[in-house]
Amino acid sequence: MAEVRLQNVSKTFGEVDVLKSVSLDVRDGEFLTLIGASGCGKSTLLRIIAGLEAQTSGTVTIGSRGVDHLRPKDRRIAMVFQSYALYPHMTVAQNMATPLEIDRCYLAERLPLLRLLSPRRKRLQAEIREDVLKTAEQLKIEPLLGRRPSQLSGGQRQRVALGRAMVRQPDVFLMDEPLSNLDASLRVHMRKELAALHAELGATFIYVTHDQVEAMTMSDRVALMEAGEVLQVGAPHELYQRPANTRVAAFLGSPKINLLDADADVSGALSLFGQPLSVEAGPGAKIGLRPEAVILAAPQIAGSVAGRLVAMEDLGHETVLDLDVDGKRVTLRTTANAITAARDAGWIGDNVFVKFDLSQLLVFDGDGNRIETAEASAPAQAAAQ
Ligand SMILES: Nc1ncnc2c1ncn2[C@@H]1O[C@H](COP(=O)(O)OP(=O)(O)O)[C@@H](O)[C@H]1O
Ligand SMILES: [Mg+2]
Image 1: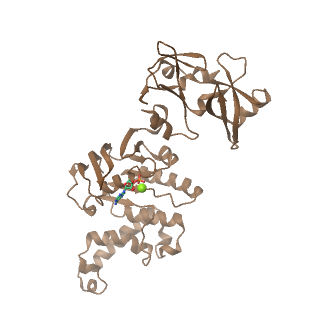
Image 2: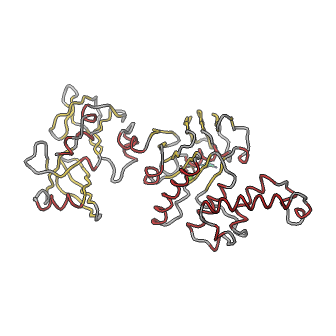
């Protein structure tokens, strides 16, 4: 087992700075997800950890070893790709045995005819077979060992690719969007399997995805990347509830967070649709409200405001409403029960009456960085009313 430490890792392709001095500590046995939009440098960072790409500057340490001089196969890591990269002409057993043969056998012992001459051949092959079988049992793929990749479903191929990574018992698993070729229901299933596998193996997982549901559900911690930089590292709920800046706030969450230009009086005290907040901020401040922090409310309740209904999406278990409140677009998300009750009470028509859960309020300064507020640390009384 091992921790992975990146110190000031930069990568330049030609003129382009793809990674800009990334520093990140991945803990021993942790499931850490690198998340960010396509092109932000996730795969490049993973390939640098694996040794498949050389960084322009900075260092990578795995366990207590600096690995910058080590070849990929000597780093005690295994990589699982989106494309699986299985050998099509080999059976599952042969695919899984290949990394072990490369590790344990001399070149001559791997060649079809020459290997017959090796005195160690029988013993080595028996050991390798046993290790492959052990991993296959762990992944419940023993019945597939004799098949070729073309005879497997997408989910089975995924499992075999995992198996091939597992046989060498690496300290660190590196996974680059391994679920993105699977259909939606299988992806949900494999998410749970991967999380369980991580718990069982106790190895360090570094997982790359652009899918925030994968990141939120499987990870111990998430590192959110943008344009070659790590914006914030933390537990999933921490990034969601206490984003460092507007960029993190806007990336996580679906529907997106409401980021509203704050109204400030001359002294800088902020208010939200006429309701004073105990926050001060300079020019350009923004207020962040998650769609679940906007709540359907009776018109007579203090602090409730009316918004014009612009769009409504009924998803069955929840409904998403887009409102125009005083010229500002506000999205709210509510459960099926709540919207039925609000409809019956007449709070929804051309206008929709809402209030705001100020305990969930986020405030960002003119540079987009979050500032601590009294509201945000108060108990969630608004939601309980
Ligand atoms: N071998 C390469 N040569 C030139 N540019 C590259 C190379 N590999 C990646 N890039 C560029 O680096 C940026 C980051 O790529 P990548 O790490 O694959 O992003 P991600 O995995 O987050 O989608 C992209 O703009 C991509 O075009
Ligand atoms: Mg990628």
